[in-house]
Length: 70
Image 1 (cartoon, rainbow, N blue to C red):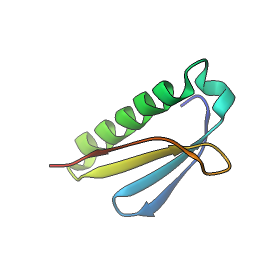
Image 2: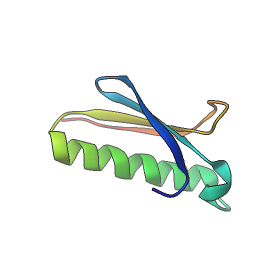
Image 3: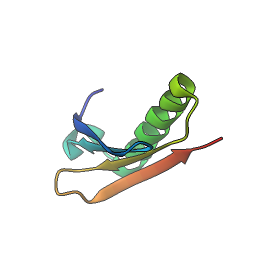
Image 4: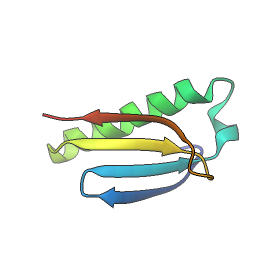
């Protein structure tokens, strides 16, 4: 995915994704929320398990997060 620098599991249901802020465009919080929603939804569809996704930029400030559960 464009702009993703790394993805790291925090625990079995939490994924932290670090992005390049410049690649998110004019409204980075909106794009980050869309990215979090897409990743969480896809992860849930594949595994059938709840998943929380946090989108951060390199200094670990959170731009957006979302959770998909049963």
